Image (cartoon, chains in turn yellow, brown):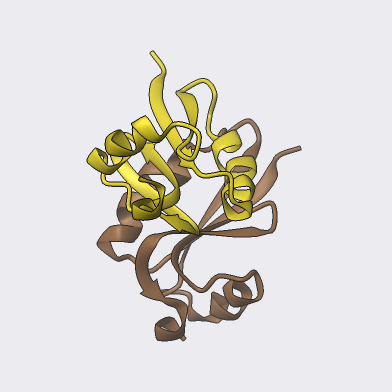
Length: 78
Length: 78
């Protein structure tokens, strides 16, 4: 069974690079990657924060938030 | 042909988590991941810096440095 991974971003250039490089590079046999644009889906900011996401872009993988470089603070997306 | 990806770390707990979660999750059909412990291989710090790595853990993927969370500043590993 594939594990769920969520890539949170806000459309920033840093986010787009990270999405292209990283979110697209996970093993498709093991991961089902959902891409969430928090600028467009503000209702999901709370979910990201509950997963420990402090900034975007971030990838939540196996319950662990991995912050990748730095695009924007999550507080600025609420 | 598989693309080379390099995961730089320094053995810190943040690094180990990122390695377990991320470096091990890349698609093995597309990436050949090399794990480099900069604490043990100080001669490779310059190479990491040339790739744009500012802190560890970091993954250099397609020439782009992706800093994952924050374990240690590269300047402290020279």
